[in-house]
Structure formats: C-alpha cells, structure tokens
Length: 275
Image 1 (cartoon, rainbow, N blue to C red):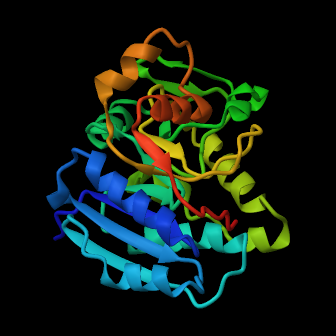
Image 2 (image 1 turned 60 degrees about the vertical axis):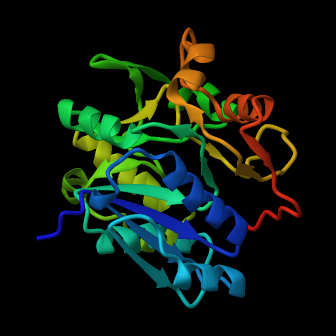
C-alpha cells in the first residue's frame, strides 16, 4: 500500500528553463510533507535534448519520481492526453495538474489547505492554485463568489472544472476520464464534455483568493512575452497583506508585477514561447 497522498503531475514540451523553474520553485515554496508526495513529468514529444536529459536525470526531493516521454507532439491534443497519462500513473489520493509554465511564488502549505477545503465541502470539484489573467476574471462566464465555508476560496457560479488544478482522485473517478478523442474532432470539445459532466454532478471549480503560482509566459493582456525565474519566494503574509481587501482573486498581472517590484523574480534571458 503506497503512502503517497499527493501526485504533482507536470506536463512539458521543449522549454527546459521553464520546466526547471516550475519544478525548482515548487519544491522551494511548498511546505507539504515530501514523504507523501510524488512527482510525475509527462513530456509531449520534445526535440530539445536538454529537456530530455533533465527529465531523465532529475532527482527531486520527494518520495517518488517517474516520467513519460511521448515520441510525438500532436498539439493541441497532446495537452489533454498528457494529463490523462499522468493521472493514470498517479499513486496519490489527490493530484495537481501543472504545466511547465507555472512559477510558484508563495511559501506555504497551500496543498493541505486545498485538500481540507475539498474534503470539507460537498461541491468543490477542484481548486485552482495559479493566478488567472485579468481578462479571464472579467468574463461573465467566469463569475465567482466567496465560498460559504472559507473566504480564502472563491467558487465559480457556472463552471465545474479547470484545466490545471488540485483535484481528488475520488472525484476524478466519479466524473470519469477526459475523453481526449473528442479533441481530435473539434478543438476544446474534450473540455466542454468534461465541464458538462462535472456540473451535472453538482461540482464547482474553486480558486484561491491568494494564488501561489503565476503563469510564467503570459502575454494575454498586452504584456510583453517574457519568462521569469524565482529569486526568493513570498511568505503568505507578505502576499496577503497588500491584497487583503481585494474582493476577488489576485490576477496574474498583479501577482507578476508585485513579484517584480519586490525583487522576488527576474527575467529569463533569451526566453522563447513554444506553444
């Protein structure tokens, strides 16, 4: 019987610097018990030898580590399929979906807090750990409200699922696997199908009011395409205090800007966007 409780499932493709920063920043900031944690990396057919070498030789500070190296990249279908592959391999009772472009900035035991929130409520389908771009928070179908059990989490009014999140394996099995074959028929169809099934079961996606990670290559709101590496993480108090009166979750632009101002991150030289 495995004592793994949480599986960190990271998907990657041809961005060695981002992948390294994603993994490094996660272990530098997470206070979760590493003896109950496993890391799984699924590579979507990278052609970059540096990233393959990194994945094969990585020795992370957690209980277990494994990886899957796919031979080809059939973007965007591979993004959905890679998550299914990772979940199928995961030993944990909970898993964290995480792409290589997430940069963890806050030192806290957010994993335990999220698990407690999922287990204490009957309608939490998943918890989003990263900051959304501002435009997504403004979209009507992304409307949220503070959760009745905890004002540290906001729940969606209309959506039951998110692409990247912390989710219990129990709920995942109840909803069923993402049907990635639908993605071959129509872009976005697999997620729409999964969203429908999640909502029918009464689940809602939740988002941390004070997210612990930023999207590391976001240019969705006119920001210049840049990537960053972690210098020093925020404490939870450092992050919360300036935003404590915010009546919505912190958005990505705010989190990145705040990190730059406080010298917590620096630009990656020769950054390249792949997807």
